[in-house]
Amino acid sequence: MPDLTGKTVAFLLTDGYEDSELTSPWEAVEKAGAAAELIAPKVGEVEGKKGHTQSVDRTSADADAGSYDALVLPGGVVNADDLRVDEAAVAFTRAFFDAGKPVAVICHGGWILTDADVLRGRTMTSYKSLKTDLTNAGATWVDEEVVVDDGLVSSRTPDDLPAFNAKLVEEIAEGTHAGQKP
Image 1 (cartoon, helix red, strand yellow):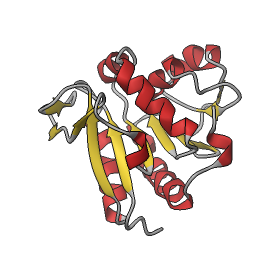
Image 2 (cartoon, rainbow, N blue to C red; image 1 turned 90 degrees about the vertical axis):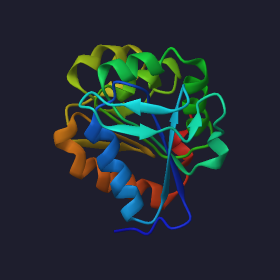
Image 3 (cartoon, rainbow, N blue to C red; image 1 turned 90 degrees about the horizontal axis):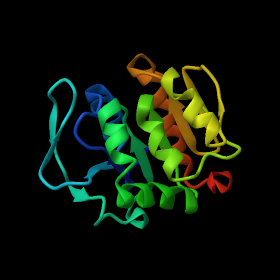
């Protein structure tokens, strides 16, 4: 496993996230040596669909993408839909693409990428119901366990987490990607 010591990974989410899509990648990046921080539109705690709660480290309005080496966007329908209307969350997400930093997205997490306008010419996967939205935003959608496109890691569902986590850690270890620019 690549060593991520000295790197910090932002996890952007809000209430209604898919619990395992936060906890499993979080554990993977920490196991590889990285620090992880939870970014949300609100202060306090966020609660997942299945009841996992976790403290917010910083709000999306106060977070600076320059302080992080990568971004993870967990899924969950309510989480993803609420994040995409938070202007600070959208701007925070876009800043990772502007800087060429790795971004990993799973399940419904891809919705925010449509609002960040970063998908033209990119190949990715997601939960199948997002196919039309992602395609309309300029992505080529494929039905695969994990897709890596120049620093953008994507997967479909919690079943894909082992492959997603492995590629997430690998892309963070590689650092910035010139092709990650929107």
